[in-house]
Each structure stands twice: as C-alpha cells, then as structure tokens.
Length: 254
Image 1: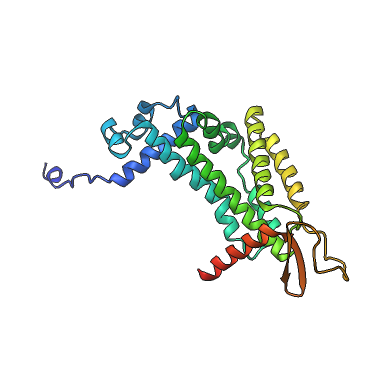
Image 2: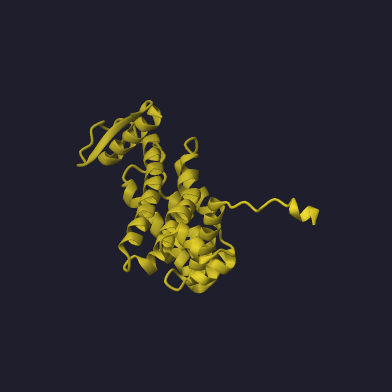
C-alpha cells in the first residue's frame, strides 16, 4: 500500500496525444479513404476519448487537412525535395535517378498505392480546401525537380531545349502513373518496370556533349538566352535563365 501511495501520477502529453491521433488517422484514411474513415477506429487504435480528439481537431475535415499538411506533404519533401536540395554537388540527372530508384517498391508498398494520389482522386472534386492543399504539394514537388533541372542547364549537363517546369510535371506524371498501374495490378513487378523506364527517360535528358566551335554566340531562336559558365556559353530558355539566377542569388544570400 505504501508503494502504491508513492506512485507518481501519469502526466498528460497533449502533443504526443495529437501525434498519435494524427498517425492513426493517416493509417485509417490510407486503408479506407477519407470519406469511409471511421473516427471510432481511430479512437480504438489510440485509446483516446472522442472529446480529446475534438480538443485537437475541430472536425473530421480538420483532421484530414492536418494529415495532408503534416504527413503527406512531409512524405513528399522527405522523398523528393530534401534529397534534391542536398544534391547540389552531384550531377542533376544522377540525383533525380537516385531519388526515383529510392522509392519503396515492396509488395506492401504497392498494395495501398500513393497516399497523395489516393486523396487527390477521392477529394479534389469534393472539397476545395482539400484540393488547394493537395495542389500545393504538387506545386512544391514540381518546383524541386525544376530547380534541379535548371541547375543542370546552367552547368551544361542537362539539355538546353527543355522547359524545366514542363519536364518536371511530366516526371511527376510518370511516377504517379506507374504507381497507379502497380496498385491496380497489385504487382510490384509493374512498378519495377516503371522505374526502369523512368530512369531510361531521365538519362535522355542529358546534354549531348560540348557544342561545336565557331558557332555564333547569338541565338536566333525566340525566347532563348545565352549564359556563360566558365569558358563555355550555354543556350537556355530565357525563363530558365531568369529562374536559375533568382534561385542562385537566394542561395548566396542565405
């Protein structure tokens, strides 16, 4: 009895409770979709009361938006944006290939598909707040890839005729398209084949060797500009040059 009387009371940890609810909700939405996700299932998984859940999240919709911003967006940053940002000393195409090849491809990863695509397909036409937050993830993802391609154009290692934003969108479409095909087939071999095809396409984006000497330093193509890199002059789409210079200046300021 004496020992019991000295037992310390269990301290509450609101942040930890919120995180547990968020993770359990993500798993439930990933399994069942947002509309079919059960609040009771989430509460049972966390042993948390309904009152505690609504203390942290005003509604089921508020919980869903938190899943997008705090879990799905972070997954995309961890898988794409941050590795590309850390690869400034690497060849840009090699960096993109490494990111693609690092995408999980186990059968259990293929089974449920991509959380970002799942929520986009389910909720974009039903809820404008969901659509806007999901669009923000795609925009940030696209910009991370486009920035890497611009760096390659500046260095002369990526083809100068590419429009980085459009090429980045195409890469996203390839990745998500193959993930949908693999989910539908419930076969990791489909995703493995997709990765091989994506890697082959990425390799085709490399610049094809140095330009021949004697060529004019002025471009007759509308919408293109020249930029000097060391002793070489590269021809790039004008907006790519502007965007690269802007990003380069921001990096120097930081």
